[in-house]
Length: 271
Image (cartoon, rainbow, N blue to C red; front, side, top):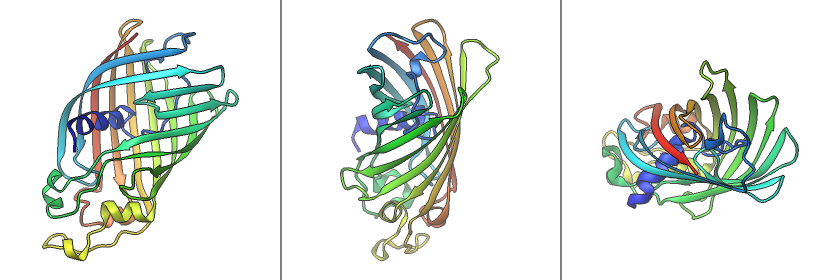
């Protein structure tokens, strides 16, 4: 795993409220609690520290210090492009005040045999870019429900994940603080489950028996994100998320823990 992907990609996952890299928003993360910007291009940069599991199901946590950046480009009144820890990577069209759809994606980092003791002797899984459609419906200013389908574009797992997710903006006791509660339920495709949670007969050892994971509901995640604006440019972001494995993934001998948490604290600057 390269240095940049190992350090930056986990941050993109964690900063997206530690639940989903596909959650979209009507405004940039760095515009929360701020007046709507008339600029076509909005950029922010920052630095953060996070703790995250070596892989989902691992009992080993890792601490990273990473940079991050966001970019939002407004093409016209309805269409925009984004590279954003909250939004992922992609483009969207806003059909009205409630319905938004587009293409979104994220980087799924590699899983190497050296990442954890339990993986020793197993085949590595390459880093891949997952892309696919999403649709969201905003029921009211506080509650949004969405769904997406992410497809492997680089043949790392040759499969897909499908997710149903929600976001709820909590009432904040502090004017410059925005609190968002998120949740997601994700289904693992057949080859995705097999790639990440099966153990081949040739890889079986004591404590790691052969196992064939099938397609099933794969994970349930919840998270809370807090964004505080120090002034019109500087902001602090903190997130805490929890993911719980389900179905065949949870039953895999590679799942030392059914649940994992991710926490992040970051400081950024909006240009």
